[in-house]
Image: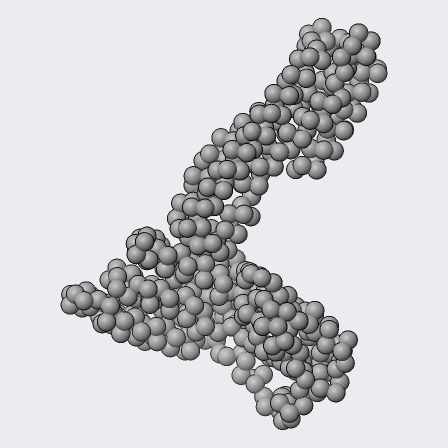
Length: 426
């Protein structure tokens, strides 16, 4: 927006100069008089006002970020920083300020050299009106963006988009394990462990993404098999193992560097290929709400509802095979898969641990697992949910001192186990 304002000022000034040289403004000045002093004062006032309001908007944004960081966690700040509404507001004020400064320098006063860029000044008035409208929008947007329901809904939207991107294929009711026909021992050489060469990490950080297609191309061109030792979201220590390559004699230093280049390592976890991180965002809000300093179980319950919705969506998706083949049906890459049980651990473990002293949170966890049950289509996914229901039940026996609360939890637990035992799905 700043660059657009810069070029727009030159374009409109050029139009004004062209109109001035051809005398197009002579007749207009009779009905719409414009003096250099008035135009200069107008642009100066607008420029000063815009930079002042931009400072106020920036201050309000920083206050909102501070509140969000203390209530929802510092890792959620990225959601506020990339908010298009905040970017639009700041961009409007700063671009209007720069536009007015650039137009202001072209105004000349004098008997023979008087020049007022009327088109550019008129457009500055339009930008000012737009800035007022944007400021009104910002007041509402800033107050609503720090509400717990809005933050949770935003994070949940990112989570569902991540699921759709990483697991696009749906499975049928009678879906069988598609990995089984690929798990052929003959595809993996018997001397794989003895003749592999380790590819190590060039630096420490979080593994943000892996270019799997690039790995397949490298393996196909070199006639090698690459096994990944980590998956996106894992923390990588410098010189630790990233991948194993078989056979080791077929790969040189140049090919090793190509393999290293397909791994993106950064300082923070991202949504790109890390599904657990997307769940961790909701989990962090929930466990902060359950902390003694905040003590807000209703926010935790909202997070649990969103987690249940995402897990129901994930349970209906086909998990990609960890065994990747080239066009000639030759095994070339063995990835480290993400399993439904891993995701349920990330989604439920910490909330269960921090919320076991709350009867409302404990009961709601079981109710959400019961709501997920009809969508389960794989036996291993069903066993993962039963395992978490068992842990929630055992935790309540220790965390809930009231006998009637434990009785309510036990009743919900029995309902959940019965729902998970029923293999009919939707």
